[in-house]
Length: 259
Image 1 (cartoon, helix red, strand yellow):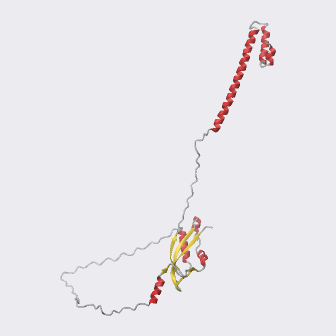
Image 2 (cartoon, rainbow, N blue to C red; image 1 turned 90 degrees about the vertical axis):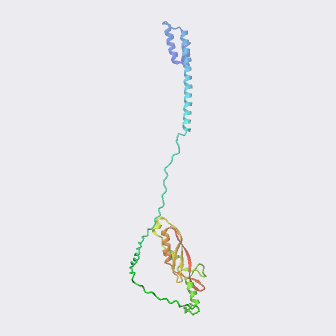
Image 3 (tube, rainbow, N blue to C red; image 1 turned 135 degrees about the vertical axis):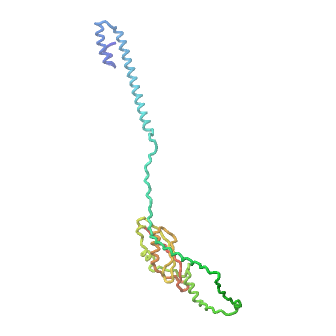
């Protein structure tokens, strides 16, 4: 094998070594040129084979690395859903006005009964004589008071009777504006954020004054109290029935609304 073939192709270093060995083979005893050529051909073939193996292993390593990366990106390593601490809802505290109670004094105990006194056996009690001959005359006239006049009885009944429906209903003097003027919004209820409509039933008397308030629909004790106090300050034009002022039930709604 010529040295130029090895130098110009894929084994330049081996070609130079082969040239030196060939030059020394002419002067020193050793392997023959044919054996040396066979040995170098085997080495060249082994080099090519090893190079192909390295390329194959390198490609296999790249493919394996890409596969592992794809698996790593696709696999879910999370253990479960992450639970966030929920913020507890704030409870609405309803503040109620505490009414101071009054102590009721107990009535004094009843007097003790007198101690009975023993009467000696030798004392005789006086017997009262009863007139058994008296009789009752059912035919005798009895002096009775004269009956009241019919007009007075009817007027008294009309004043005490409370009507549900009348010919002319009572009216607030000043209108609803007067009602809200005398019914301020309680500051305690405003701070607590309470609102709603309180319905109060009253009796409008013949002189236009309200009485007997009764809460028909409640919202809160503070608002109920404010509605009743405001209505009791009103004055009304009394209800009329057959051209007479009469007492009548009346229902008033009082609306409390935060602006």
